Length: 96
Image (cartoon, rainbow, N blue to C red; front, side, top):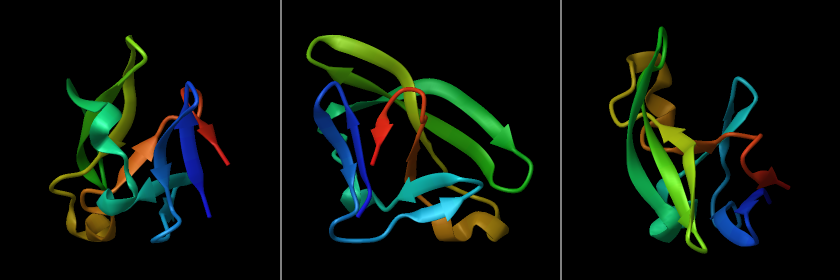
């Protein structure tokens, strides 16, 4: 089981389904992510083989953690297995 927390709140938990590991990052299936703390960000980045990443910020206990996580809504074919899966920045969360 892999769990992601920030400020004592659980953001993702792989108890029901396993995350996919890509380039050392855990990508959690949508059903494993607690989106009640996540808000869409305007940030996007481009990966040559995965495509355009969109970002979430987190609002937890009145504080905003900018661009805490990312996902690929329309990944390129080689990354289709992580479509809509959410990954978190290791320097902004605790992964255990």
